[in-house]
Image 1 (spheres, rainbow, N blue to C red):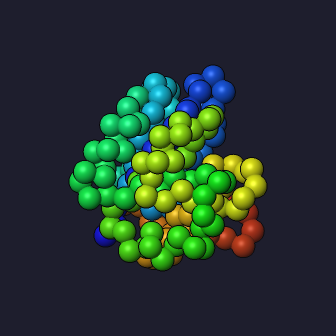
Image 2: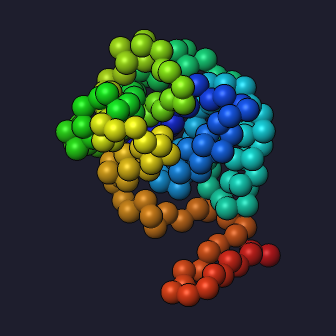
Image 3: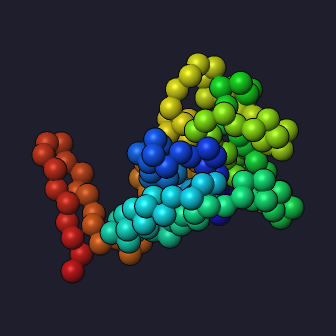
Length: 175
């Protein structure tokens, strides 16, 4: 099983709560094992942890990590690092080599990313060469490199389950 973790850089607690939460939820839904938050925002950690308890899975969030330490540790343990940036090579040109990787860290920024990240990354990858959301970049990247169909992921120990329907909505709760 491929290991994928997201490293979120530059999160500004007063400004980026919603986007960072959506990066985490997207990462979880598309098969990442966890997210590392290179900022101190316990409210996001609580929110994501509570969602995982209700909706299942073993996704984790670690708050207030040191980004450079995490990247170097990941690489020293045999992992590869992909930095999502509109300045990188186009995603379709990197997909095959990323799919071969058994241990992948995907780095996404919020504000200006330190240049050292560009140098430490094994790939700087663009999901299009236009400004767009890091949530979209994470979703498209995880979908493209997936071994299975990420849109059909099922999460063990879930308390809540959506029942797919053509019309309306239905959620069932486990006893």
